[in-house]
Amino acid sequence: MIDEEATKVPAGVAVFDAHVHLFPPRLFEAIWRWFDAHAWSVRYRLQAEEVVQFLVERGVQRMAALHYSHKPGLATVLNRFVAEIARAHPEVVPLGTVLPGEPDASAIVREALGSLGLRGIKIHCHVQKMGADDPRLDEVYSICSEIGRPVVIHAGREPANPAYGLDTRALCAAQKIERVLQRHPNLRLVVPHLGYDELADYAALLDRYEHLYLDTTMAIAGYFPKPIPIDLFPGRAARLLYGSDFPNLPYAWDRELQVIAETRLDPATRHALLYGNATRLFD
Image 1 (spheres, rainbow, N blue to C red):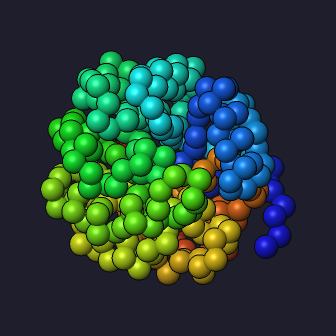
Image 2: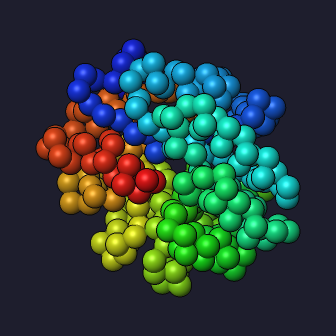
Image 3: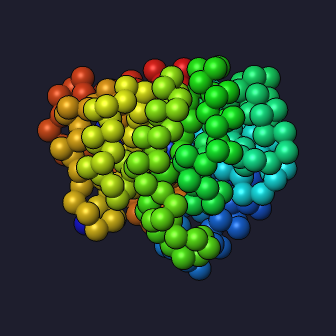
């Protein structure tokens, strides 16, 4: 695939990137070292303020800022960090995180969604080493359901990597997300990467559960071996979100935007996917 990057979002197209990572400098640098050693070479090594500037200059109007905590005590620091960035940049829609099961996890989530004004909670099953249906997550789900904020949870099996120190294919499965949705029927749940690689299973879950959402991050970029699942878009467009995973990408920042532009979607469907659904979900 040709990997030339555009300098701007196409004229007249509104874009809400639902999957952008913002971390403090030392943590970003540690993440990039991990990627260098175990995954891919990150193309855009930009610090948080530079990430926001890069995307805004290219016409991205809004972005959901995601991060995740891998040890007790870190979530509060990260949540306050992203809240400060959002106060300075109205384009940033900040989400918080928590390490489920850590001391005061409920208080951390309530602070994030309360006084800090964050718009949801991010969980990463691979990094935090727990399946989506782990009982330690129930208090997070319950608080988010109560307050009416979504949970973004990397619960797909890929990218599987032994460097996580566990078998992500055994840890993650679409059936676990179904159990969560059955236990918490009012919870709005976003699974990134279209649930890769269980694409058909997640498409079926979209049809059964009205509060499940998927984002496109990396799944339609042609980077992973399975075909780009563009057949998902027309019938389920109301609960699909465009996401990029910027800046931790091995390819051009707008590759998925190019794929979407080349897909024959009607204007209303394209607007919902690129902007409208995320605005409704996070606002």
